[in-house]
Length: 140
Image 1: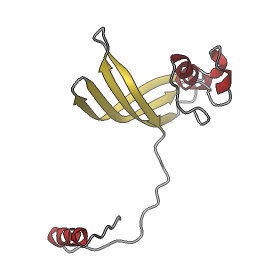
Image 2: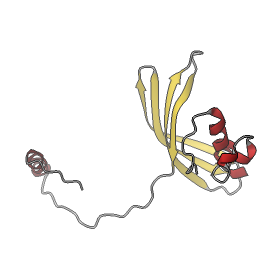
Image 3: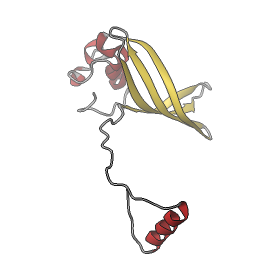
Image 4: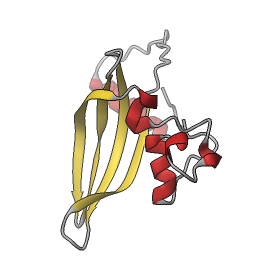
């Protein structure tokens, strides 16, 4: 986890995150937090499956979001990670990543035990509009 140094503005800094501080000369400041995501701390990945949720084309750029499943090469354990990638074409015409964020999904879900019974959609809409007009905000 990149906790002390979450942002990696240079190629060298990013390389430490992906291959591990001990495997990349000059990355001593990242030791203890960079085990090498791309090499799974030395265990490797046997498979990666992308599950795109949406891809938005915005002129010269594209944004993709979804999740990917990484299968550990030694244990077979599958880790799901959510991602967002931004792509743009470089001078050579090839699309390349200019923005990236990945994180493990939040999994502490506590279901609500209180329910509001609404007789029909018309009454729900009237209630929402009335609340908005009165300057009230209710988040459920």
